[in-house]
Length: 104
Image (cartoon, rainbow, N blue to C red; front, side, top):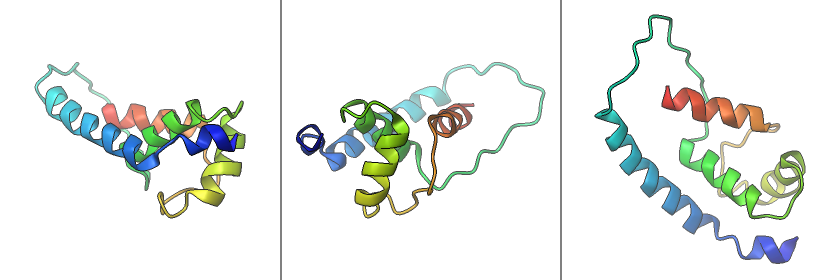
């Protein structure tokens, strides 16, 4: 798996994702929003959307079969400097919630 992970350049992935997200945010501001009368949910995360998407993209290119193994064996022990706000346990469900609530 180290051969596949060696080809993943976290900084390049993060920069591409962050550039895309900045453009996407400006585009979405001008789209009409569906009316919502309920209370807005606040999902607090220390990771930015760009960081979350970088981890997800790296997982899909890593060769790991499960996200749990990827996160506990690769991200937590080796990528702490790249992502200083990592949570000790992070599931794909938590990542989905982060992405959904940030777009809502």
